[in-house]
Length: 449
Image (spheres, one colour):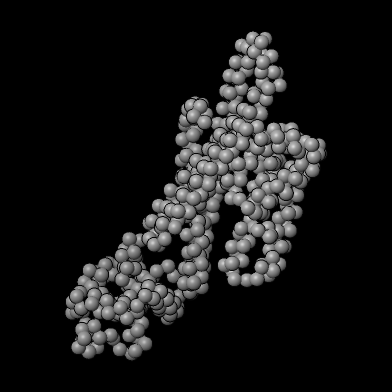
């Protein structure tokens, strides 16, 4: 393995480009779940209202909120809002100003909505509601009153504040004649558009990484074949007899192709594993969910699994198992159609029981000689493998994703099977098309070449 790294020095800039692209891909990959959560929580749950800062409000609401603020908050509020011709106040501040106002706006809106429901302003001073009017309240009194309100809410305070703020803003926007549906649609379009951009960038980086990794692998294979050929040519007749011609041909074809494939897989997947792992840990720590240690353990377990799979694939390759597998398949059938069917069944079972990346890293070196012997295109093989592993995740009786989804939904297994069977049937049909009509997947790369 260390010798392979030495050969990679010749493609140092391409390897560096792959690392940069993988960092970009990991960033996009980690950003998408947050946008999905925002669509559900904010876009649907909160009707597109992102925070407690009003985009627009009536003059009376503006004045009442100022009264409940500290001097610093009131100054920031006056700076962030401008009065429109109809008397309402419109937010004109930047993102930083909105974030600062959002820190206290939720509790202020909660207090204000409680006051409107009770028909009187809250008693901030403790001497009666009437003493709370005006702008002469000290910051200490205002902050102390907020603390009393938060203590009264208990552990559910944050949820209650968010719900009341969303409800209050919806009502306020309705009183101003604003279209709440349009606000929600705009948020969904905006967030969905960002998700689409991230997805396109992630897809583009994955394609570029595959392209660069393939070029590096091809260059490495070319150099190795050249050096092996130069070495073999220099052999004496006795050395040729000792190694045998068939063995030397195997060394310069199948073995080098396996090294080439390992390099491609390493650059595309093995390098990506620590990048996405570190990025996931950093993201969890920044979100302060209190579950960082769980994510750290999970990421570490996955990285160990991939590492063990990589080591296992190396041991399997050097032990001669690929040639034994080839002999086994050849003894069963000489039909390419049957071999493809057996490969589909094999990967389907593996997909039920094994993590996809580990399965790819472990099984690819074993099956490469089989592909060469039966004339199976490597691109077609990669797609067949990936497709089967994905189907295996939802294939009864032991599909991991199927069981997890059934558990989360708290539904009967039979009901879950009935729901998933139509989609699974469509997947099998597409798999058969990809398997026995290779042009479905290979025509575009062939056209580009």
